[in-house]
Image 1 (cartoon, rainbow, N blue to C red):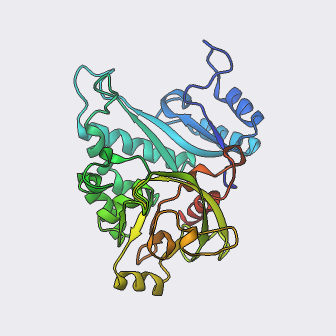
Image 2: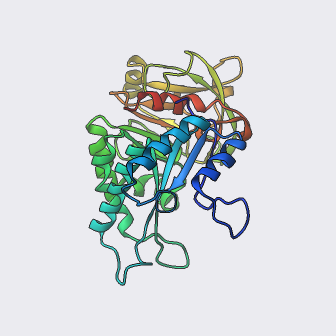
Image 3: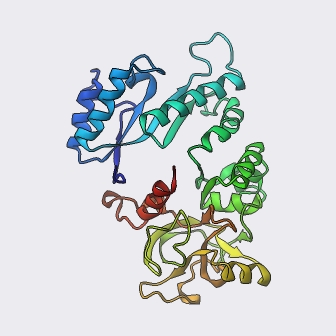
Length: 330
């Protein structure tokens, strides 16, 4: 099925307040919006969840084909407190996510979006979330992708990404990467990957010591990776950045290795492909905006390709990165 442009989530979707929409009606509505992707909530949308009958599975795939929709995310609820008269254990949360991973795979989804119960008015997730996710990374390895998004983890205390890189779950991410799993780190995710030793170098304070939030030019430096295969060599993209610590730094030996091994994925440039100090927004060495690992299965970049994946968001220059990943996944 072709890569989705944008999609609609049925998590709380209805055509009129207070009504309940059937899945077939929802397919009609979603297709009418021009969407090419659909997200459903397992417990709400799937009869006899988590083991739908064969007839429903046949109907599900027939509807996807009829409306030309791609299953994007399976949303799932890890009910940590509501229905139980006690706190859910890590083992129970692990089993819940494993169950939804297998169901998502059966229905053609490449991603799940688990929601955990919260423990206070600050919406702090139940502490079992970390262990439950970590214990499922081996199973997720069959789907072969971990994404570390942007988001100023731990408030960027100490250094950007430093505390997150020492979180227990990163040990599992390291093992996942060492086994050949694909890992994408965007912005704070890139910082975490360098702090965790999964990518070389470091992300330092921007050259002018200011937060940068604007669109920048990027030149595609390599198409020899599962993240960039759909781009044309040397293509110039316009992608937004939003960071205070995006100044990529590395010693001369590391920089020479990155250049010599074709590990530089993106460089900052202008519309005419010029790469120099004037097109460098943050002071990064050699205008480096993103790099891949030795085995080319880990990518870190400071710009946000996920912000430009369909016209309604202002452009599609980031879409080919995710299309490349979709093609590379089993």
